Length: 170
Image (tube, rainbow, N blue to C red; front, side):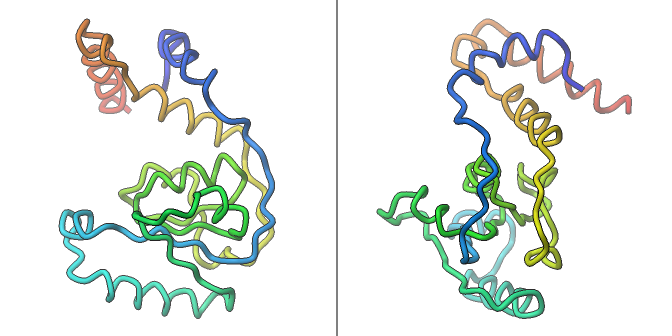
């Protein structure tokens, strides 16, 4: 649970946030696959195998075209999002951009997008984003962002300690 000091602190970040929209209009499944480094970190032995397993999972829920967006692409993300029906990611920040634009996200349990993630079985269901949940989620993400001065002056450590202690008591 965030406190007033968190909301006061993150207000400076909210000014830079894009407007939250609800415009799911794309037709494709956009997948932001993990990089090789992320695969190693999470013990994924083969990106190729990860993609094949994902394809098998998707076959049970949709027949939409699947587009893999590799991290090193020159294509603007907004262009891919314009044509996305849903975004699937292990833990990429692409999920944040999708959610802000009103595109549902499916992610792994390690992802910062997990609180707003839908299930594979819901890919073809009508999607109505819970704006209250989305705004609380964004506030939570922003409360865990710090500028260099906040790291230097101890604000970051005090905030993290307070939020961790609060979570341990629940």
